[in-house]
Length: 320
Image (cartoon, rainbow, N blue to C red; front, side, top):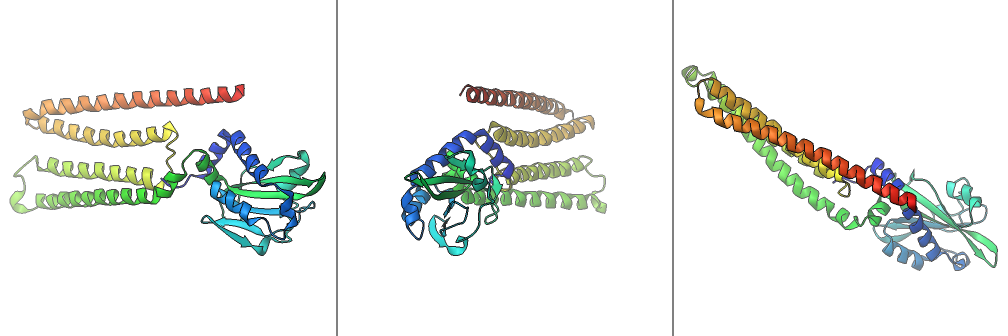
């Protein structure tokens, strides 16, 4: 459950681009006021309201008609408003939101870009402010695109408790790795016992017990590795069926490998004269085939359902 990757953020932005622009327009329209230009600083009170309602807003400032910044930067850091005087008198006439200003008198919104300050993907939106048909300047708002996407999808609360989830998963994975260590130690001890003089040739099936321990260690390690990657290291988009399908596929694949090896070992035991293992080996092989067929059907039907869902959403968007 790591933070959204840049690729995921861009995909979501293109999916909801029209909605993102509508939200940005409503924010700027709501706070745009000629009174902002009559004060030496941007209205901090207005910015506090914006920061409380829209936690993805990062920065706000004013430009004159030539693109020169005439106000301090008002930044939102950890839900607190901070005045940053570094932006005053800075020439921003080459910024995309200023260059494209003549295309429309409404809100101009840039394409996603990497912020020099935070290194995150962000958007900048600007709106020309008039008083009695005289242009006073531009109001500019910068937003964190990742947090904007999370806000729109109702995922902000989960993001706040994600560190706690990661800690729990980390403890579980650590416990699994401890079990792997114990199993490997047991297997290595038995391997050493195979070479002692008094035990050579005593039990021809003893190596199979060692293989079982190592197979279990492999399966548990692969399970812990899957949990670590899926729930801690990688971003998991719970709103996409493909993410859940990927997790289930990896988990069932781990079980398939473990059962297949156990079935093969049981079959070997039967071939060495232990006839009572023939029926369990056959049932385990059938279980492997059933799991494999079920997994294939699940992956195919899940992918088809997601494709139909995407196609339906695209059709609805085209009709609008």
